[in-house]
Image (cartoon, rainbow, N blue to C red):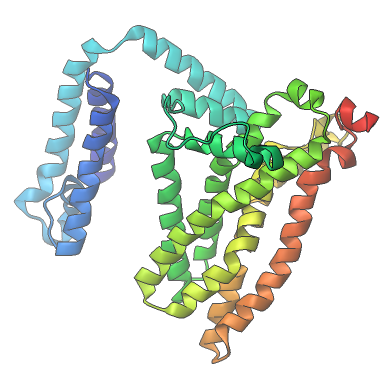
Length: 371
């Protein structure tokens, strides 16, 4: 009954949202209210939020009260009101969104991460900002020396607020996972890797945009690998604030400065590994099924899906080894430094793959072959 009430509540909320003629910002603000309300219940020990009502229904056999039936009542009210509002739904928009959903399914079948990201942003109406958060004057000496970094900074300046909040939330989740891992839950390292992998997919957007226009890349009188390396280095710098957010969250949760030192030591190599893993997902091998046996197709798919997150997870190993050292009475920061040195070698190899990928695979652009 609790599962049915949760499903109906989600469907009802979706119907109400789709049939509402209010600005998108109002809808987003309204969606945050139940989350904040539930957080206050958690901190203050209350049980007044909608999610608390649904939870009370799950515990009905233990200590049932009159408020335990509030879950089905709330779900039914949402569905009824959403059914009334569905008449205001735009059929044209529904048709366009259903086409996007079909394209997303095809992109998932092809493991095309880049197309999946673009389609998801279109489905969420997540467009770049018309006015950037900050501006960089063109033609200066900085742009002459590091043109790729300046272009990447301009791309980050047009990130919509929703994307910034999403990436920051991933960093907070990674920080909480680091804190739980520090307290003994080793499996939390998987959540750390998954969070930073998803964040890195967003951060390497400038590199992805470069790959979206290969004909323009071929016209540049510079080897494509050097441009990819410049994008990767800028993305590594952009990942460092996310590690700062994760570190602050982890230290605030555990109140242990040794954890903060371990995170600071792991930040740079882990950021480079995450960027390289995200680049691996974007720059996947070109049609390996044409040369590989049919029996190996399943292994190739699993490799593409699991290897990048697993590689990103390895970036958090310095924190894990520091925790083990502290538990055994050894020097935690020293263990983190030693492990980070090994991870730096792994990061160099991974980023080097982005640098020489076209040359190694034999798919170098014509300009590179001529050079």
